[in-house]
Image 1: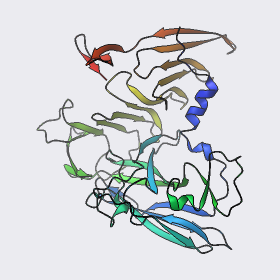
Image 2: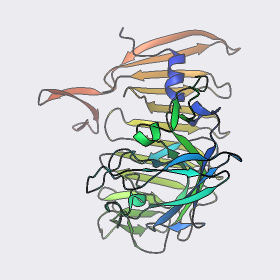
Image 3: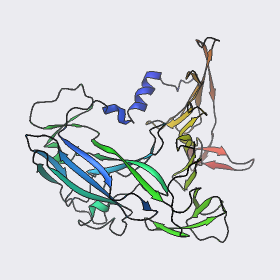
Image 4: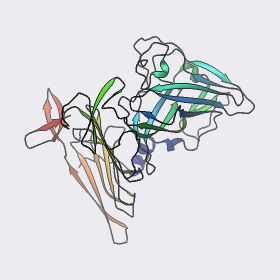
Length: 393
């Protein structure tokens, strides 16, 4: 039997590396970053202004910080991550591209600014400012996008400041992977190799009464059946979920949340689909990020009525897939599955417990959930859509 599964400890570290918990106990940094929106809420497609407040918290000494200037190629100095609003999980929804991709390529520069003791400066960055997204030199602050639209809802955002790899940044920082690493006493500031993090900023986006909205230069045509609102990227006479559908929501106009539960669905062709079912308080009951080919899941979290996690699925950094089912209320693992990147070979491990909850046995079997065919000399995985149709990856 080919063993695809990993030791549980190794899996733990694969998961934890993707989390903010890695640097829960950071080394001292005199410079802090605070992220805030410039107003309480926005409507879909409206330009969103974030103000980054950079503070030197040292009461005695000046310290340098890197600021954007004319650079329009290479890695971004500031980038944003979007997390779900739920409080029962810390769920990353979208990340923006960490690289600048302006229409004119000229290396340009960032600049070093020394902040006096307790000095603060504020710099703005923008979302949905596609009029200036590609502007040369003058609007690098507008070069922020998640590659997918942010529809109405409440989101948690966090800013990352990552100077690593930028020459000026390397001149003022000592980078570290783990907090126990001892850094040289050379006068440089300590900085996690993954960058410094801001606070968590709440972003509220409301639905408007309009039947057409434009988000990042794309028009969305909205129709309703009186309960749900359907967003299409081309005009349609009638609601037809088979063509041009991008988004479904139950949020009414002038709202960004709905007491009593919300329905949320995204369908981004050639990227991923998203489905969210919430508890009445906005917490996640079920979240699924998935594709239309096999294996489908990219990330899943599912909870029972007591908000105990019952399912977790994700694609690991090495592109293989992992899923786990939990027994509740004990929290013990009922079943784990490790699948190859193309989903054609999986190890399924079932754990058997006695009546006292003690593990007494585990059963391992191999499955082949995805079919394989050869197209143009290449192996491609497929999942059965109907008796006659396969969808190929």
